[in-house]
Image (tube, helix red, strand yellow):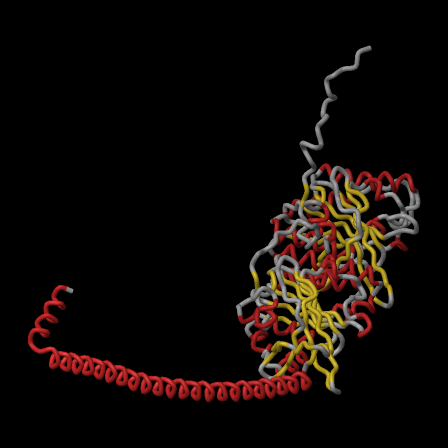
Length: 584
């Protein structure tokens, strides 16, 4: 028999036609699921008490109405309409207004297990009629059923239970309703009866854990038919802004980088970084021992950013906001003016208030709400009390990646020990773009501060140590004295400068004396030369005069001799003599 090459009726290529999804509007969740919940299909949300099942479901419903224009129905079996309205008001949701606008229908069905007696058959036909009426009344596309345990309370027949659960989920599919059904977690199963997870297209498990007296909520997608999804556990937060999920898998190394440079707020520190400062959207680590000025350097960068009109968030883990603002006044930084202008927000919280994941999700949420250009976390070493080094590092990796994806510059401070000044206990140096170390320098009974750049990726930077000073005029860097005895700072540097000035002055005086002596010798030499020239001139004149007189006397002597000869020979002799001269 030859197999038919014709595909069966209804066969389709899932890769060409992926399932439709309904976005939930819950921050981060749609990113984890690749678009939201399966559209027109039921989703099971299960978990223990207090993990946020009802709030998650309500958030899905309200966000659908407000953000996507899809009306909804909330079918409650545990909370009355009044209780549900009050409880969801804490998340900022006004159910009464949504009901008045005919965009939401809330139906409460009271079921008391004590009043139920199992006898004969069991049918959900009445529920379907009631649910269909509520859907039609508002034109709903989304439905929440909270919760299944109450609906099937008192029903012991497993076969009937399985059949009715399957029938309920099939009814939801047939009516193309995107539904969220909540259920309590059982012992060793995702639900109390262990049936619902098998007939659901998507199963979401919520959990709340307590470690070191700190509670953390996490979410995991157990299954999602016809779609890929994140498989990790994701921390999520419930606060007055609703539900927010941190999509850890979305933080990848594919963010854009910037060539723009921003000032550190200290001009001489900028000079050490090619005269331009940090790269925008880079991560900067300020490390050092206690009292070296790490927080002040961070505040300097915040002040400079606010002066540029940029927005900043400072997450403080050891000081309150007013205390930070007061302390920074002593070094010339008026942070309160930036807070009043809405350019700076200081969020102070103890590291022990939450777990690491909750700290991370709260910071991400604050960053998304405020949209800063610069984020400061001071100090990250405080997180060591919240977990192992690897846990803290993993949390910071997610924070740094999140900042880079948003194009936000991050500055973190770290308290080091004197024995390990060039190391961070949580090993984040490889994650840092620019690392600046501030250290104590002790000399002559005085403690001063020194600053140097350990590394700065993508730029040439100074390898010199600078003295770091704080005053009411702000932060300043001073060139240290480097000599045979090492680095001198503070009073030792001032004294050495004074000695250098005195030495230079003494050398200058020696040079001046030598110059004066040389000038005197030069003048004496010139006087001697002038005297010699004068003597020579006089001698020359005398000799010329003597030569002239000698020549004159010689001529006179010859003339006299000629006269004597002439007188002795007479005229003939004189004529002969004359002819002789002519012949000659």
